[in-house]
Length: 301
Image 1: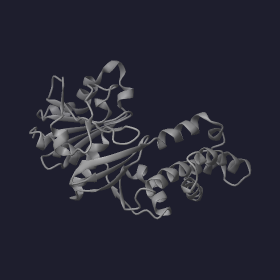
Image 2 (image 1 turned 90 degrees about the horizontal axis):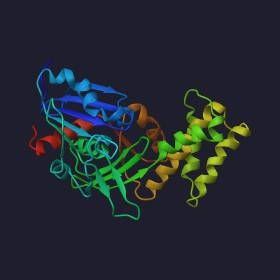
Image 3 (image 1 turned 120 degrees about the vertical axis):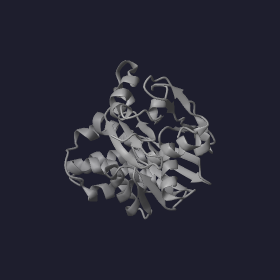
Image 4 (image 1 turned 90 degrees about the vertical axis):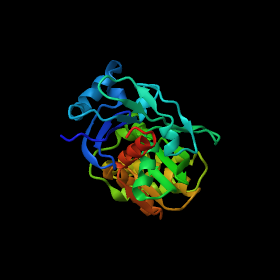
């Protein structure tokens, strides 16, 4: 196996993705698995990294750049947050060294936005967005990164200017697993009609508390046969995503770039189209472009 110029690792809460990269950001090889920080016992992060990238290190010892929740208080080494606006140069100058015997390892700091009423933070998504801008050859735009905590990030002049987090995925999981609504739901193929119904309901005008009332409508839709049990989960999903998109549409109806795997982006693409929002998909692999860009400015490669 040829030695690469850099090993980039996107290390999150539930999963880990590692890339062997050349100097231009091309992916030579990859590893991924369910070794997120919550699944690593007794702080054994060094052992997980060795097992994951060991074959690449045996062919040489390129530098390693980590990003994501691995730099949080619950991770390997805590990397302080950098205040926005911030770009590649700001992250490159704030790298944190991680003790590791087999290679030189550095960690990318997260970002914080304390300009609003409520402070907000990101880890990993900042590298994906900066990588997406590098890949697309743009220096501004609005980006959506769906997941357990959905992130909306605005970039200007090649730097991340502001962002907002929505706990959409986590609320969905909790409501499906720990409420009466969830007990009525059955697994099945995606019910697009039920999903669109939920998106429309979630996006309706109303007071901030209206969504709490609409949640109960998922239960009554099942009780009165307005939605099949196999479609109730999609109705709930649409309700949450519709409310999230509507909140952003009140701020800006311009195009958005969705950075995610195809499966994760699908629901947001369907919801965006239903509400008249033009969305463009960007592969989540753009994180590799971000890793290489940061490494170059930091003088690592």
